[in-house]
Amino acid sequence: MNKAGEIRVIALGLIRDGERIFLSEGYDPVKQETFYRALGGGVEFGETSRIALEREFQEEIQADLTNIKYLGCIENLFTFNGRQGHEIIQLYQCDFADSKFYQLESLVFSESQTHKHRALWIDISRLKSGEFRLVPEVFFEYL
Image (cartoon, rainbow, N blue to C red):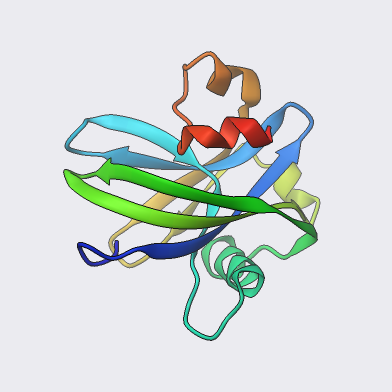
């Protein structure tokens, strides 16, 4: 999480397989709410958002990406864990280079020593129905 009052630039990868997409599960303890978002992470100074995207997928789930295509930029204002957040999201559409990722139901990865996350395939219909909460909601425009 970034410092208060800071705008964070992140790169996220939208990976779709037919009628499902690959998302990471998050939990907000203040709202007591589980939510789902595309995988990716912060863009570091001196690297492009595309390189950041590839690095984050490598670091988090040891996955190479292929067919990477820039979709657009999303400005996201949100509250997480009782704190206001502000992100500039560089959104990419991509595929896994290794087909084994399409066979997985889910996987667990570590963002840090203390934070473990689950990533899983979710049917788009279950997101649209509200059964699973997709963030930011503007993502629906890209599905």
